[in-house]
Length: 399
Image 1: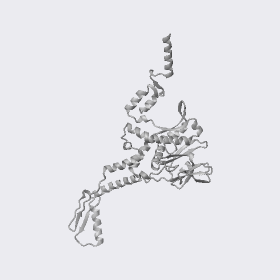
Image 2: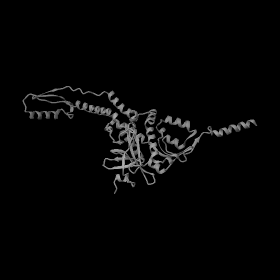
Image 3: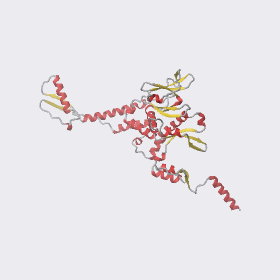
Image 4: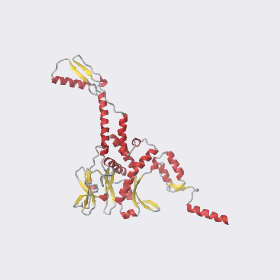
């Protein structure tokens, strides 16, 4: 029985026999290793990335065919892959969530676009490689050599690899690393350790223990260990030590340094600014305007990247010329206030801009039968008919 790796990369086409590293204009090699400086271990960084990923995962990928006068949905099988089940092991939400998480952790996200013999998309698998190297064959065709944690590797044509890059600057094929934020992440880690040590020091007694008799070094160590075990641990309820005359204990005043709230907020703000997100988005206390700003600056940019990349990798130039494309979009009005939704529907529905079901979707209500009809007020008429009416009226007055 074929393993997980073999089922995904069951390639009938042989890998190129002779390859060389891709030559890039910036010099050096195009090699990716997913070092993030353990950014995901930071609770602040992880919460912020999660907020972006779970909101971006609401995007709906759709194959559309656009002509000068209309836009219609394309292949239903392709849309099922994009919207429901991109592969047998995850949902469309899982796929986008994972790709966006990789995008912000490593500034590079990869996925394998598995196709059949006719070039039609069969599945999309997000990839978590240990390294990626861009190579070319003798004809100049670009490939990606992936090395995985299990020690196995696979070479995939670049045209079958989805790539999304952040901080796309110094390398011609890869996004830059997150080294710029590592000092801030280290500071956040130090703050957490400082808080932990402060709590521990407040829960123990500190001082000098003086014995009123001569003890051997071994006996002294035993007595000290017993005293520490009895009184100098966090389990000493009440913080009281009961002593007899054989020894004297002189406590030392401990003044743990408390971390200022402004310092904590400053570090948190630096991480949020690095990711282009606000604290209100992370803790879900945003208002309508704050959500709109987050959508336009973060979610929409991801939607554009994903749309352009999949359009180019799934369709030939000829197919694109005939209007085939992939778009990622979300119903932004679903996140508006009820007052805004009501006003929009009140103002725009009379112009025939919404169908009944579209209006219901905005209000988070289920569709109804025959709800794809557009309602329009009689006060709004087609411009050509208005001209005919005016000309006819003018001719009637002249008679």
